[in-house]
Length: 98
Image 1 (cartoon, helix red, strand yellow):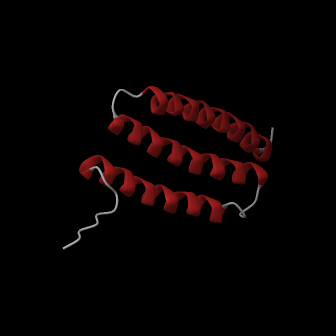
Image 2 (cartoon, helix red, strand yellow; image 1 turned 90 degrees about the vertical axis):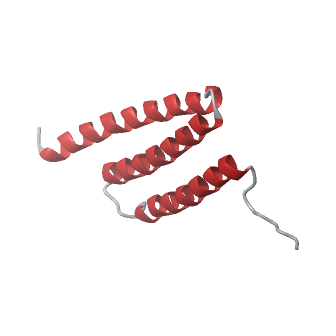
């Protein structure tokens, strides 16, 4: 077995592991006991989606998915800030009318 075949096998195993992790985190999002638990699970799903995109790019031997992975990371960061602000203050956008 040469290194290319070994890389394909390991990549498929990692894709399966990340997919299982996404389903476990999805269960935590739906059944989480508190809202912060759900927020952390959503962050975990986003990170796992980035990993899944990277693993698929490795499996397909392409660099065309790098932009998609970066976009997911940026949206994940913005979403994390919005969820944290909502959990802390109860609103996302403050409208102070003086």
